[in-house]
Amino acid sequence: MPLDDVILTATNVSKTFGKKNKTVEALREVSFSVARNELCILLGPSGCGKSTLLNIVAGLEDPTGGGVCLEGKRIHGPSRERGMVFQSYTSFPWLTVFENVEYGMKLNGVPKDERKERAEKFIDLVHLTRFRDAYPKTLSGGMKQRVAIARTLANEPDILLMDEPFGALDAETRWHMQEMLLEIVETTHTTILLVTHDIQEAIFLADKIVFLSANPGRLKTVLELDFKKGKDLKSKEDLIALPGYLECEREITALMRAEAGKSKDDY
Amino acid sequence: MTGTVSNSTSPAGMPKPTPQPNAPAPRRRFFEFKKDIPASWSVILGIAVWACFFGLWEFAVWQQWANAILLPGPGKVLGALYTMFADNGFLSDVLISVWRVLFSFGLACAVAIPLGILMGTFRTVEAFFSPFVSAWRYLPAPSFIPLLLMWFGAGDTQKLALLFIGVIWFLITLISDHVKAVPADLIRTSVTLGGSRWQVLRTVVVPASLPNITIAMRQMLAVSWTYLVIAEITAADAGIGAVMMRAKRFLHVDEIMAGILVIGVLGLLFDFLLRQVYRFAFPYLEGQN
Ligand SMILES: Nc1ncnc2c1ncn2[C@@H]1O[C@H](COP(=O)(O)OP(=O)(O)OP(=O)(O)O)[C@@H](O)[C@H]1O
Ligand SMILES: [Mg+2]
Image 1 (cartoon, each protein chain N blue to C red):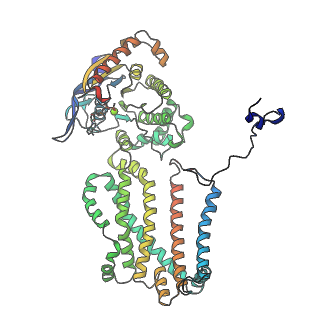
Image 2: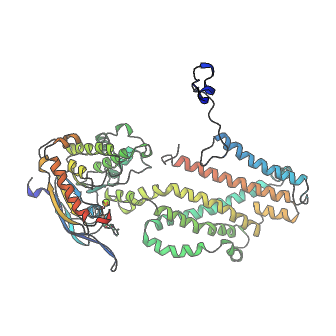
Image 3: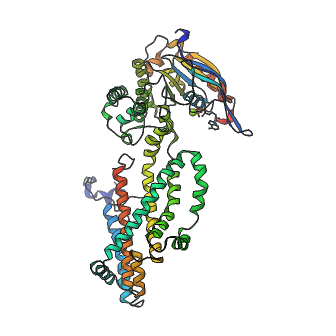
């Protein structure tokens, strides 16, 4: 990938919460970049500042040091270029699936015909065609997350941010969602920055893993998953059968262990 | 085959009777921890409590536990109610009372809903109004009656003002609390989709808090009825409370009781109406339909 095809760069991002006497240093000088059409994973032990970093990229939180640039421009505050999917279910209960997906486009003044066309395209993409006119209360957790994904994608962000989007789902639903996400990436070529602390999820989805260490959150290492390069992974089974998978998982598990070991009593 | 148990269940080598699918269900016990009861039971029990009440009342009258003038029977009260509507123009008094409640409550909502929403959304608005609103909440509205009487006389304005200050402060507080409880991630979702402050307010904060605002209105409308009676029995020439005070002067206890009955029925009616509004306006909520 050419060097100039970097879409997002974070440079020396630091974040300290709290006032003078009681402060929590969540992030210290974290730098990384995301290339166009890349699926980049932020991985690290619990409490290492992954969500904080993602919120800073989203513009929901201001860094206390450093900054983030999208397409070379310094970001200030939230915007539709950086759409976010949260771990909690955020489909608006008073809107149908279709109205939810249409919502972002409505905010941005997209004309009605185009809204309809785009909403339907993305509802199909997340396999919710049958539930187009259903209210979220009739949907399962995985379906609600699919609504959130479709809604954000239909808004055509430059980068899709996801904070443990499948964290609240049961294991099997999570696999389906992960496979669906890869399917979506294949058709839409969206750039994604996704936070997780699930190692297998990270390996399955990632083009690149940005690994953070804890207390305070710092960049530990960036892992390019060479063993996956050029392979067309459709399912979890494909991944596990791939030579090099186990080594990779062991390497990351060891990294995670080393971090967790720093504070033995904190689990 | 010596066991007493097997002998007693299948006598004389007969095959064991298999449980019938339509065998009677195990007997339902009357007192069960946190178990739902059949709808018919709810209706019967609900009627039973009123039957007990009227029965006891009738019994007390029959036994002459109290002076017949002070304690007329249910029949006499209903009779008085009929005469009041048929001959004494009671309907216009009822309508005046209803109008007072609805008008003052409408005014209170017109102020409290926008203000409560803004206070629940923006910390600056809250910091400005909250100290003021909290202080007023602890001042009992009836303590303003002498003042209101001097300012506005005994007319409608005084009553509307009392009803207004009786509910407005609680209404504002309840609404702003409900608005504060709107999940932050819903707001953050809208903002990261490109929502401006005004759009977030209009398309997320308001619809997300509207069901609870309706509940707060239902609660405070009941309080409004309380203040109506206080306002009308202190000074009024018309309205349900005024009729009751006039009846007191002539020792017409049956008319006083009829007035209480009407107030109770009206309160229930408005509560029912607002519950229906809630059901039909928010069909998308969990646990509805
Ligand atoms: N608003 C806040 N005020 C004070 N401290 C905060 C705040 N938000 C996060 N922190 C602290 O910053 C650190 C990083 O939190 P963050 O939520 O970013 O971690 P995380 O990696 O997302 O963890 P998890 O895997 O549990 O989601 C934690 O120690 C947390 O307590
Ligand atoms: Mg987190």
